[in-house]
Image (cartoon, rainbow, N blue to C red; front, side, top):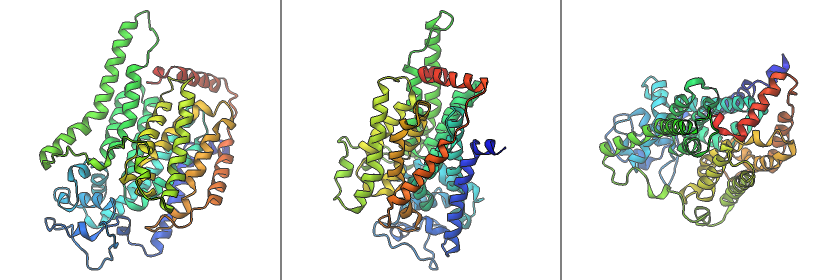
Amino acid sequence: MRSRIFTSAWAPALLIFAVYGLWLLVVFHSGRDPRDFIRMGLPHLEASHASAVIKVDPHYHYYPFKVGGYDGQFYYYIAIDPANARYYFDQPTYRYTRILYPMLARVLALNRVDLVPYSLILINLLAIVAGTLAVAAWLKRRLVSPWFALIYGLFPGLFICLQRDLAEPLAFALVAWGVYLLDTGGKHRLTLSALVFALAALTRETAVIFPLIYGLAFLLLPSTTVGGQPQRETSRRWRDAASFLLTALAPLALYKVFLLIWLGDRSGGVAANILPSLVPFAGFTSWAFNAGRANELISVIIPGIACGLVALWRLRTQPRFIELWLLIANAMLFVVMLNHPSYVGFGGSGRVTTGVVLSALYCLPLFARRSYASLWWLWASCLCWMFLWPSVAVFSDNLLGVPNFGFALGLVVLLMGVTAVRRPDRSLGERRRWSSIRSAIRNPQSIL
């Protein structure tokens, strides 16, 4: 019984729920208002009088942000007044693109403005737990310890999103379930997975990299001849790939068209300052080097480069392993080519690089069964990812507080101990299952 509990995918997910749930209890017990998570700035709040509900509360102490608050306020404004929120922020077509998170908060709050601050927090809490569960279940299905999912659940980039009412936890939770459904969705797995990926794209547009890589791999990777009719197999692969990509990407494209028609934004809904930088690391080096840049160097750039280089190295022998391509794409787009505004601090770059952490965990079936020592790159990256945990855990606007490698080292050692306890594959069923996993690694078409 204990063995089943320990090897269950639910165990790490429930532990993550306990960690963040306890943190929220401490925060609210200290007298925090749920609106503190939104981080509203008066410049945006006072930009218009078009809305009857988006207005200054004289009894609430707003954050004295010189730049007008943080991104969480835009989700809040959309949630409480979807039609008129556009008058209270810049680049409305771009802001409205991430529509699922605020609208889900509105529905969960039963259209009550006073409950929206709570629903925004609750969604992110449940999203982090659900994402951890999906990763753990996927890893367990690939005969890798589900406790590796704790690396995802404890990633400080997601912790910041919980503190600031941001959309990344929901977006990447949907991505994780989309990947899981590719394995477990049965006869309609491609359609179900693509629909979940479409929801992820409507939550955070950067999530499209996952269905795009999977769809292109399904389209381009050669498949084995079936029944002596390779041409029929090829045509079916192209048809399925086209259907998958269309289902996953078309809703975002159509919604963008709707926004352009409604708001008349000539920029196409894409802000110039959020596009990838064409010069590697130009977004990072364009800022003066200080403590904030040092934190980003350690917690974003070093682990991102390490993971990307390891993936490139393994690509020589395993070019068909799709998750390697996912890791390389995320490392290139969201670390190497990340733009100047996102490198404003770990609060920006950390949450954007969640895809690197997620795709790194998806590469574990290729490494974990060889030898535990082959995961050195993951543990080194984890040490870098986690060293800001003490700073992030303090509910503050300043992330330059107490980064602690001692805490991170202790946490990594604990994770290494937990994930090293694996159930031996003694049963014939498990041996056959691992054989099918190795076959899938060699030929990912069997998965898709």
